[in-house]
Image (tube, rainbow, N blue to C red):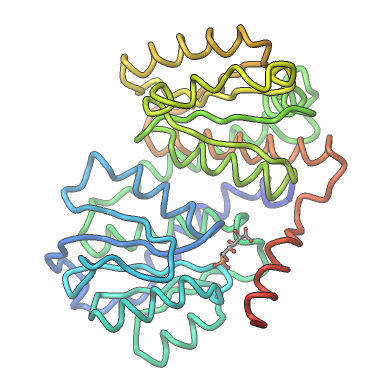
Length: 339
Ligand code: PA5
């Protein structure tokens, strides 16, 4: 896991190249698509969540993430649909892929191989191969950046070359500050992991800015640190979950609330974070803020993703667990395949 984290900047850089070199049919370039659908599950879906958040205020087309067997009724011949599955064998994604073919959507498949590759070749769907040998969640760079470049090559968004370069540079710098050889007093990821250790973690992101990063932190705490946590978003959580910070009273001191904070959060959201922070602190729970870094939306999003990944790694170390295996997911897939 630490090797993946140390090599993440290089992975993102390589992914951009994969996206640029992917063979796309002419009929996909500058076609007047009406919507974009990204299909995937778990570690392969988080890249899609990030793309949806990243493009939200930039493109006119609706971008949706489909984490299901079926597709919404609006999907049709004017849809650009990218099926993302690291292994290429995830049944929900395969099922959505087949449904998209039936609906005559413009489909692209992205995986390291598996059934998705075989089906794509058989049905003459453009197939983009990413390197094998990673855990799906460790291939986020490949999944996100190659997909982003493909969207720009299809003419759905403008080129992100500059932003990608800056983001890769920021990740590289952050990697030096959070590496295992950096002592806890200078290492923010180690410090936060220490604060979360032994606590139930409640993660709060904000809709549109830090939503996908909040989801990623929850998934990484589960899969790497083998820790249960929950996630909710502002402003919505101010309209329900905040009331729940009362019971079970004695146990709340064993909770930690983590706010993901972005300087571009609306003023209203910043105010809500401050007030919510105070309310939660009064219960005896630990409250922590993680601020994004960098000067573009892409950099800020990836700064949160990257620190979250390191935190989950250090929490795994503190929990005395191996961050890589995900036995429960493997067991579930096997059982479902058998039935
Ligand atoms: O992290 C994991 O192993 C899972 O969340 C997988 O990503 C998920 O089960 C989907 O598999 P795949 O990414 O191979 O499509």
